[in-house]
Image (cartoon, rainbow, N blue to C red; front, top):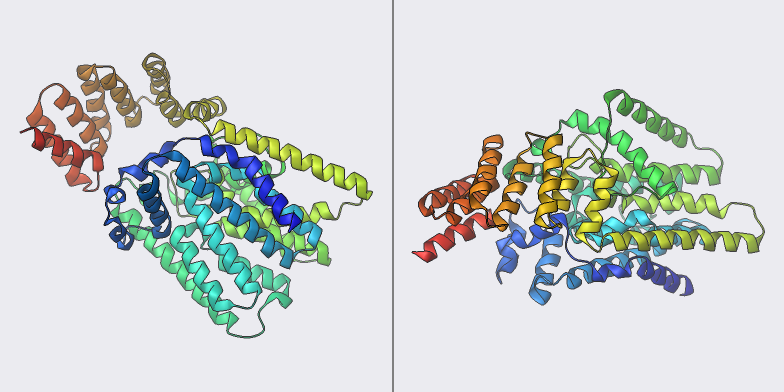
Length: 491
């Protein structure tokens, strides 16, 4: 009980300040879904384009209880993390020596690489999926295979990125045969899990094909092979952050030429081959957990592309395995007991302070994106995001810098138009929205933005046509529907 209370206290100290944070980036997309604000919104759970119905359900319940107040959303994220910490400890103590299990669970609970998943409301999907996987792992270790299958199915309904979890189970059983259930149908259950993973993956591919502007799949803006080449460098970045937790950013600038990507993959595959050869029991355990962590990264670091090359929240579930490997290593360090206790406490305190600092950065949009701009000065998106948190004059100056980096990026023109519109300059805004539309004519948001500027200039009929065309391109565009309704209501 003492270990559990200490783990919970550490996690609360590390990320408790998130309760004072607001919304960031994709968090606002939660409220753009009209189904969320409807009492019949639960019907949206059965939409084939809804790939994460369990996560959507949690957002729907949040909205019904507290509306758009961010504290309720952050409270749920924090509570889910605490649940994950307890489950992680329950699983690890069944798989590792007690001291190693406590160290590994503490790393999972307070390591600053977990900050993005806990502090970012939109990342709740990976928190819920991890809880489902951990509950599945615990049930599996207790011999309740079909219960484990049910929990894994729930995890997939929260986020499909946990699809490689059955392969991690297989890796554990290969290294620790005694962990395989001796009764029931463990082999059949694992095949069922793999089929569920395949079904979840297929559903995601379908959703990316039919959803306009989807940030993954063929609409991600990067080829599968380029994405795969970059992921080897990204994985090495993740591992570096685990060992040396400095240099975090919400929008990392990943520069991965093909030769470097190939070299990094060669290094990673070399580690896997070396680990699979086995060795002494303790050494092979560490290797197995390293491989398990890499397995859990497979769905987000494969040939299925995503717009974001790197996102620290993708490490939340794999951190369980990497923490187990580190826990085994640290637990075996030969030092006097008193020295070991002080060193362990000191390292824990450092990680705790770093996580608290990360949470403070996440408490405001300006601090979050200012850090991103400083650490990726040649990247456009952080400048656009930071501009939204600055006064108009500074925002326009920053957007002008972004235009210098990417003169043909429609997002820069669109954001500039929004700032000008808010400053009461609809004519200048119309010019910027027109530029964005010329650069991306199939983007419904650009049509909607131009319609807003036209409406502000009194050109109601032209605005109506833009809103209608925007909804033809994207029938789910909430702003377009609301803007069209405002014109109809004014007649």
